[in-house]
Image (cartoon, rainbow, N blue to C red; front, side, top):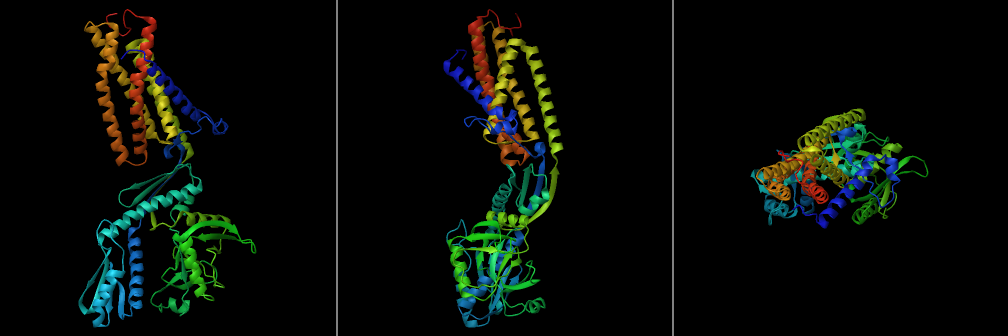
Length: 537
């Protein structure tokens, strides 16, 4: 193992150059980094929330609101299906988390039962022929329609996953760099936005559901009559923010939804100069919007955002171009925020803030300073120990391997754009200590071989070959522990685990290969009669 192979020398030199090149951007100011030639790396480490400062938000997903919405949609589907089939019914409504409807004609109960079983709901994922709802007959010609528990649980889980992706898109459009957005538990989401010092701005974009729908205004009764309780079936009274009316009576069924939007941009009205939001539909949305507008010329349709009417214009002509605009009491900032929300998509369920924290930049700088001091103190301690135990030569070789190890860790973290947190600094210090531990094992094995009477070269060779098993066992154990922490942890714990995982891989390389090449090179040049670490010398 002590042969100075050319491939070993090349690998060590390339690894050192790689580590130095990709670590360099972390030592340069941002303006200098931007001016580097295109062939040089420019990526630097991302500092986490505890080092850079920023905002921490913990949200819970209101899965109950999602279930209520699904029940409301199911109610309208049942109403339309029975009406289209000309099956008379009454008492359609929600009872104990399910729907109940009474078929007034006894002769059509079985027809209604079979019709709803075939027409309502969707296939249940993971089953063959199963559907996500059950339809059962009961006494007094009543039918009970309910979602199966598996469908509701799948909806809740999917809502959390979709919320994470939508939140990520919204924050990305704010320009916040590398937000850490992770799921916590069954229905909670943790957001760490490093560098974003205004949590209220973050909450205004993240927490708004932004569910956009286009619903026809119901003119059968006035808004005053609806407010007095005379709301027709299939309609609802929604508050308004358009400045023209306090509320509008609208049809519950959404003719077009925000999911059909492909773009939304904040613009200024050319006639009034006021901020507006221009939107564009996909082909399906354009077709529906064109059909609805052509069939309802002269009637009003409501643009509803999060169950509030923000505009209710009169349809003057068929709108077949697939685009339109939203007017309202917008400022330039609110119009831009609405455009961001519409582009990113609506949250599948409302979010509730459970916890909110802000870490100031000064506190982050203090943490960086404390971490740097800890690292320097630890490094000085390692230097004193290694040189005191094994002398300047072997101790210096270990420290050279340590430097290469540190460069490679920072380089890998810069390439992968890993986020460095305070626990990550702890993981880095721990990794460097473990790297030196591998050299201690090698050197002590050399001493054992020298005590046993073996020659210098064979003792050095045995030190590396026989200590390798112990080194691999120790580092594989560390790697498995880091994998467990990364898989089950969140936030800073993952940062610690990621740093530790990279360090385990680079440690084996630097503590074995780098040290071996340097000692083999020294032996070829010096041809020593005794080893500096031989206690008998």
